[in-house]
Amino acid sequence: MLNIGDIQETITMIQDEHLDIRTVTMGISLLDCIDDDINKACDKVYEKIARYAERLVPECESIEKRYGIPIINKRIAVTPIAMLASACPTSNPVHFAHALERASRTVGVNFIGGYSALVNKGFSAGDYALIESIPQALAETEHLCSSVNIGSTKSGINLDAVAKMGGVIRKAAELTADRNCIGAAKLVVFCNAPEDNPFMAGAFHGTGEPDCVINVGVSGPGVVAAALKKAGDCNITEVADTIKRTAFKITRMGQLVAQEASRRLCVPFGIVDLSLAPTPAVGDSVAHILETMGLEHCGAAGTTACLALLNDAVKKGGVMASSHVGGLSGAFIPVSEDAGMIDAARNGHLCIEKLEAMTAVCSVGLDMIVIPGDTSAEIISAIIADEAAIGMINSKTTAVRLIPAIGKSVGDELEFGGLLGSGPVMPVNTASPARFIHRGGQIPAPIQSLKN
Image 1 (tube, helix red, strand yellow):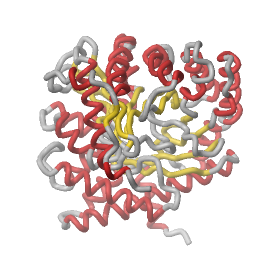
Image 2 (cartoon, rainbow, N blue to C red):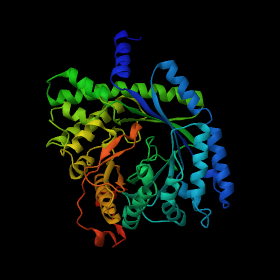
Image 3 (cartoon, rainbow, N blue to C red):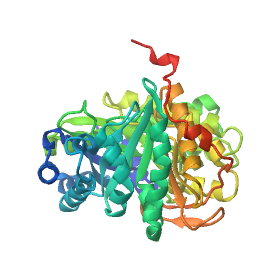
């Protein structure tokens, strides 16, 4: 039986507290599109995406109208394109990028992810060619997102891939310098990448997934912050309970949308990813949740402890609400996309070193961080290596999305607009790690990988 109080509470969450479905993402397998003729493969890719996702956007818009729940993004994730590129090793994988871009425009989605390679233990010819092509692919497309998994707890860290990605990130920024270096903002480097993640830029359709699946990402930092303000001056155990109860309600809404989209599109329901993904809008900030817990500023001593509590409570509340929680699920800390993080970085309360400590307990990693445009490829690679090590040792997903602001230095700003927001250029340690990075090889898997 519907409770009028619950209905009113949900309406308030949507209207005043920025509750939304951040994304409905359709995952599509392209394994049956493999062909040694890249032109034929691209035609198959375009045709399959256009056929499977033809009704994705219209049905999501219909669900929005029926339930009054905002669905901010409609997205597609596909099989890592490096797998298709391996079948045609003498051709430029950018052809696939153009096919994906054309398909995304045809069906009207916001982003399409999966221009990806999984190289945690080594490269195939397709992997290497795709990674080489990433800067060009991102410069020549608008909706395409790219990711590379360079390590895992099971296999260790591919330091050759880490070294490669520092240069790829720099080049992606350079080729899009006239567009605020947007290429680097659509590229993420993972350790322990999940195969059912609906969030960009890291979404791809894992090889263990069905031929087609619907995954939903829910976000509600403003709802959690509002609930904590209403709870008042309670002890920290009660803070955790408040977050769990709020996460439960948010996840139930996400499951409703996921099941409805699955039914309408005749596609299996995969997972609900309850991730507190912030936006630049006032009142929709993870940093402000931490400050509501009692910190003067995000970045102060105690920030990592507060974030650990938040991330754990969100996961517990989500798991109780749905049997299909997956993806990343927890708290994101993308600097340029979070109004509170932006303020903390501008005011000097938040530095990259503190953000790195926070990534040990959050759901992703160093996300949407703007760094000086003259930062060397080796320093970028070393930051990736540090973050991957945190993920590898702790058996968790970590990621790096750095944006070298070409032509800008510390104190300048880079403006993306929309959900990507804006961010101050943050200082990095300029001591050279080049000798370490150029050693190459494989950082061995930790002892906890031996769980068979």
